[in-house]
Length: 245
Image 1 (cartoon, rainbow, N blue to C red):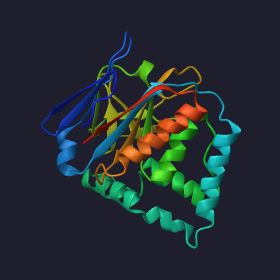
Image 2: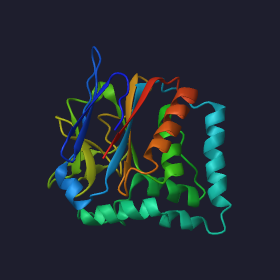
Image 3: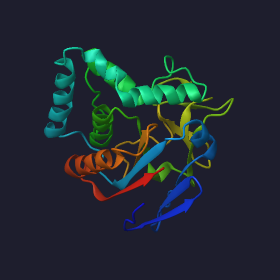
């Protein structure tokens, strides 16, 4: 664990917490012990920063298209769907009691779009950066408007009866799904985030969480990649990184 300006890291048993301190914002992220027991290699990379969620510049759109072309030109494009990271996510869903063929990790869903030649969706600079890093890393990424997060965030398995409206989707059955919940309730997952904490053009500060079910190796690299892209394409400022495992 390492210290970063403006963040206080606390380690307690299998849990690590981060607190983003500021006049109006405090965010805490914790991995639940129950989830950790079923998926012991779970690790998260949290990236926070101030951003401008405007339209993606041409340079970012070009990078997105390049990733699509790289996958399309592979001898067997569908092979990306069997990458170790995707397989680890599918295994974690099974361990938590969720069918990964019905509820796919967000990285797998994006990769399937690219294999099908549909490319990455163009939303805004922040969302597009997160989707690009998800495709490159093969890891699910949650993205949240800090201004709509209430209290601490826990990464845990969904409980019976829990639902929320997914972004541009129907109400999502969250039981068994690896999800992020604040004191109000679930607001994001490794499959689809909710409308409540979604990033819009009005968003000023974000928390992005890269989810790995196969350990922390490589998470620092992808968090740094995300931080650099947010700085370059979304006017990112005070971008900070913390690894939780």
